[in-house]
Length: 220
Image (cartoon, rainbow, N blue to C red; front, side, top):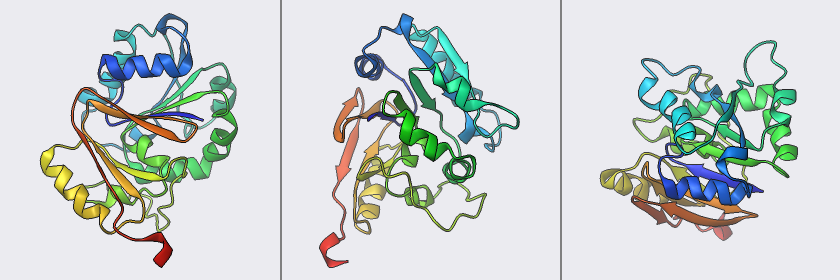
């Protein structure tokens, strides 16, 4: 399984190069599914971040981009995703995304698809694949619009992620990690985590930090 878990998308050359390495294809040959489901319930003007994530793909030479929302009505999203090399899920509301992933069976689809395809997460969709999306509750956090009580993520990795961090936020995440079993990565928007068959490597042109979980699993 190959995952590229970003804070804010493909924001720099180092992260872009990691994607090309993971797909073993040049930008000109990549077929990317741009999946905006998490952004469906985001309020306000999305131009500053949503369309930037889309346009950055073009800036790094990717021309074949198909926008596919798996929560949209009457869309055969599985058929449309089949021809894609990369499943790029955007940022947005983490709780809504997890709810829709469960409702639409996208979690079941991913289990099979990621044997061949590369997953790119941006913010909420990076949090999605961790053991728990509880990090989205850290103030100011995301509104829990579907009123989820089960925050269990897809669990493709054994750590949590907090995106969009600055140095002040790093301290908040450090405190949060003390209450968690799993380690927590804090990433700024120039950072990402490359995961290949369970091995995680940070890819960054910015700042990031890593905090061990404060709860001993053996004591649980």
